[in-house]
Image (cartoon, rainbow, N blue to C red):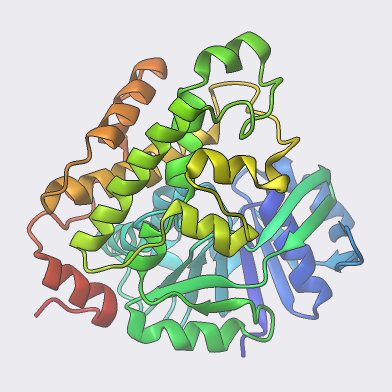
Length: 366
């Protein structure tokens, strides 16, 4: 059982996780690359945590608050990376030379191909340590930052799939963190966690297809209720079919969006439009106030691009996804395909499906 953790990132999620781990009695370091962002936390020596519905609360005392990555991960058993997935490559490069044998790195979440990217980056940057990298399918907390030293947890998910790279090490990771997080369960492998990334389907397209409304109202409408019209839902269904088909080409039975809505919220419907409108939890959720939002700049390159790239590599038509990537690139004046996690960037372009499967399960391709 791990006793010493470091949380990488002091945003909404990182502050909540660091405080909660500390309140559970673990030794916790907190790292943030910008010293000014954690200056008050450092002075106070911890984070004040509040929760709704009687959840964890109190002052979580931290062992170290720092912007020095070497100090942050020194002697730590488990490294919890709670950053936007667009920052995974940068933090992997930053910590590559400081990682030690036996350490565990968990990405919260990996989005799609997060662990594959992280492992490639640390190896490309000279890391020879025997490190285990794992990724969660989604973030365990619904949380927010309430102030410089305050965090709030609204909900802790009851079951979150997690997979290590290779999958043969998943149980070791689960065993290491189970005292703190018994909610994590075996996610099969990192292809399964990555292909069941529902944010890839809901977030970018729903934002892009309502971009006029977002810019005109600054997000003053119900994102899932007003934004998911019958036509928008049909586009989401096409994207979802492409995701499930790419997964099938990799030998994976991915959950459909309708199956996920049933599993997560016990919500059903004749189609995606009806099911979304039957989900009470979606009522009242406002749209992003701007198109400069992680639903585009994170979810397109780190979720849509890797799924589409795998599809193109293994013979699956992904024209719907390609159209969303193109529109996002146009409105943000950037090439999200070039910036994203493509099979070429991940070093997978020459691998067969069987080689890729063997690598994520066993760590070898021979």
